[in-house]
Length: 396
Ligand SMILES: *Cc1c(COP(=O)(O)O)cnc(C)c1O
Ligand SMILES: [Zn+2]
Image (cartoon, rainbow, N blue to C red; front, side, top):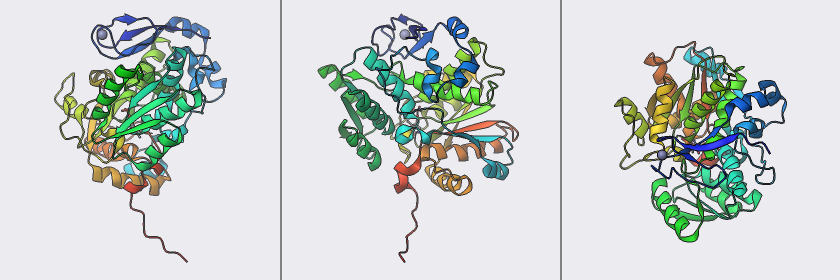
């Protein structure tokens, strides 16, 4: 066992909570809890070279993750996803240093596997017997997969219009699936009620302290891939914003350990125009966001009317000199084809949204053409084939 985890500190008021017990949100103010490690000890216990030599996957960074034993979690192979240059698109955009990190290579086809790997392992280690999770889709299938692999029952609640392949995955993993005629916010209400009634652990986004740690590993990997001199910007398709907060947390921890050789990347939140609470708040210069009424977009992962941790998302953007961009559904569908045709990457609609956002930022002079930029494609489009035009096939 490695235990460098000191406490769970509230991201808003700073109140500390005992990390040896299971927690959801801050007991004092109800905001998200963030795990805090003894980074001084971590930096004496492990080096970048040692981390690089370990077997692939998120647990290479175990000193910066909650202390779970191998038997608590399942290693389905999350993490260490491909990061490669987009040469043809780069030329088209006049950029010399454009990269894509392809999270579609994770188990269950999205980066949600990172959060689930750590979240389920921590829940099992802390004695949770039954899990419940509201989801726009992909978190549900990822948590269902990891729960199956450790033998924990899980209840998943998702919008009825979630793409059918995602529902099929949840069913295949043996999850108890409930569909609601509404959004993830409606699913969250149902999970809250049922979890309280039946004693299930409510693993809602940012109300559960360890999922963000799993997503943090994206930031650790990105920093390492650029030899600890982070890229200038990371574009991130923002739903609940967990990944964005995770990358910010990764950079802060690496900086405190003295591993970083440059400033953290600018964290750029990309949302769908029909569901852009963070973009609205950013443009208004506000420190908190407001719920979007009538939230709509075809990208399920972006269909979050108000991220629970909106203040933390905005803080991560502010502290890194980031910004926020909204793109239309027609733009992100066109971008799915463009990424596929020009680079051979079949990106999910959420990930594809980054391309029109990037064009806008270049046009506005918000990003330089010679900047090193990473697009974080959060998932594989095979779950979303109904969203792209399939040409009529002709049988021979
Ligand atoms: C969940 C999800 C997102 C949004 O992720 P957050 O960390 O909640 O902002 C983006 N893309 C896909 C494919 C997702 O499943
Ligand atoms: Zn608090």
